[in-house]
Image (cartoon, rainbow, N blue to C red):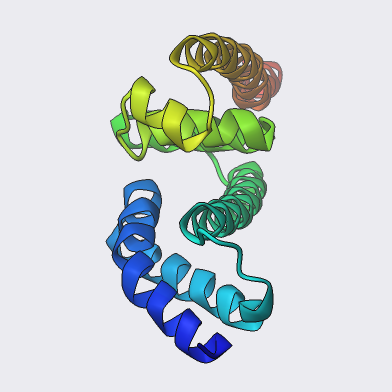
Length: 189
């Protein structure tokens, strides 16, 4: 059997399972992209494809998902910085919409500041809706280990959020208080 024929057999056998795995991590559209990239890597390395190929393919898919998340985290960080820059140049108006935007900005910035491991774990549970058992399978660890990691990641996120909220509150109130103080001093008697 030639390497091309073996690759075809591996592709036919493993494609649905790799697609299912990738889709469970990142959704259907991104899962299809990750699966295509996984088999592109496999084609390039077809001479080195191990037997059985599925665990190796799932490892490649997992690495591609992690890279995708790193890029997303970078985009979130850039978006958060841009939102912060814009908010410094405009007055923040009170209201539910402003509070929601500010809270989202703080949450995205806090999430982006976490380690890749914490961010991956939290997003597996919160964004991708996996159970702790499913997340443990993805991360190749026991349920007990995952529970401890999840608890610690949540605590780190809470601390970052508390600090970010305090910083945001100080930066929002300080210019407003300065404006009121200036207006009071300059007001005619």
